[in-house]
Amino acid sequence: MADALSTLHLDPGLVEKVQFRPFSLVEPDLGLPTSEVFAEPCAYWHSAALITFFPRREEELRTVNVEGSANVERTFSRHSRAGSRFIHISTAYQNGTGGGRAREDWPEPAHPSAFRNDYEHSKRMAEIQLSRSALVQNGDALVARLGVMVGHSGTGRALSDLGIYDFLRVIAMFARRTPGERVRFVCHPRAALHLTPIDGTVDRLLALAAGSFDRPVRHVVNRVTVPVADLFAAISAHLPVELVAVTAADVEAEPFSRFEAIVNMRCKYTSPYLRFEYDFECHDDASPPPVTPRILDLLISWYVREGLPA
Image (cartoon, rainbow, N blue to C red; front, side, top):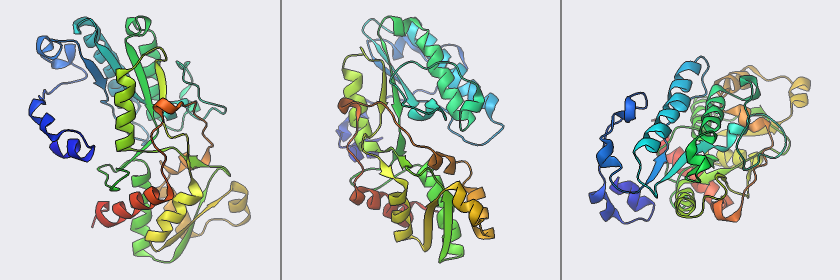
């Protein structure tokens, strides 16, 4: 905790005020000593979630992300003091594969086939049930939809193995085993990622939580995106591999080599995010600072140097 506070340029002395309580999303009142936790008006951050893109995890995702979130909302509604606020951390990609602009509005139900994976669907369902709660009707709830979380914009440091880091880990494993290969990925012609460094994201989240909840659904994503071609170039600059963005027609004309097919198969849970063009409604007060080419290089180089398994 002290390390996190220091990394985010917060007062490390705050660690002395932090109290830890074990809890469970499936127990009544989360298994918490509610009289202590909710003794005063508070901002309750619900960030607990299961993040997995693997198949056959539907029931577990529903238990944690949907039913667990409902239990959190009920516990907060029963025990929180007047003036308390509820912040639900979601994902901008709950928009699924539907085209058009993703609005900062409460979502409608959709069939699981409208999403890239069951995780996205579970986050959509959690938002829908929150939208029907008294918290929303009373103006006491905020949903913050995050983009692709990455490390610190000043150091490049990351503690995650999700998102682009899972993709980078797989690429590095094959590049180091068979250096000098070219690997193509099918991408949308205008594919770009909303990379959001942790430090700027925390700053925006804290500001939103302290402000008005008159717009209760917010996209906390960079308005300036990172083109996939730039991401591929940054990775290729630090690993012995050439990553190339192509269209489905290109692959039809020149099928994947055996090596390319294997790498694509290993990236099959993260690479689908490269095949879409995303347009998230976003406003300046919720947009973290952009990921510049220098920051992108820092994020990739740190992970290649420090974050990858030996």
